[in-house]
Each structure stands twice: as C-alpha cells, then as structure tokens.
Image (spheres, rainbow, N blue to C red):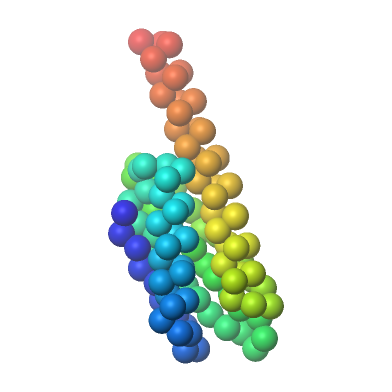
Length: 104
C-alpha cells in the first residue's frame, strides 16, 4: 500500500509524520485491497485537523476527517472513523462475493 503524508500551513515535528505513517499502515490490516492512503495534517487556529483519504481497488474512495484540541486526538478521531469505513466496505465486498457464489 502506498502512503503519503502532507502537512498544510504548519510545521509539525518529523516524529509526528512517523506516527501518522504507522497508524495508516495499521489500517491496512482490515482490508487487503487498499491501494493507497493519503493523510493531510492541518492546524486551524487552535484546532488540529487530520484528513485521511483511502483508495480501494475496484471500489470507492473513503474519506475520514478528525478534529481535536491536540494532534493525537485528531489523529485518533480520524483513524477510528476510517476503521469503521474500511470494515464496512470489507463486509460489503465479502457479502457480494458470497452472493455471486450462490447464484453460480
């Protein structure tokens, strides 16, 4: 899976970039057909914002947005939302494959 981290309008330490990459890699264990993940980090006044965009092979593009007073809170919010979305797509994909086997 290809990962990319973008930092908009603010300087974050390099260790935060590594933290984001680690979290994004952990999301790949829920669905093996994720082709790429893009994370955008942004700070708007006192609110930190993390946006995760995942591309699924032959499937939808998933977007999760997390906001919080600290960077870690925003990252946890975004990853939990993305986890739910990925699991939903995985379950839908698995159900479709079962239907195809029954009709064949």
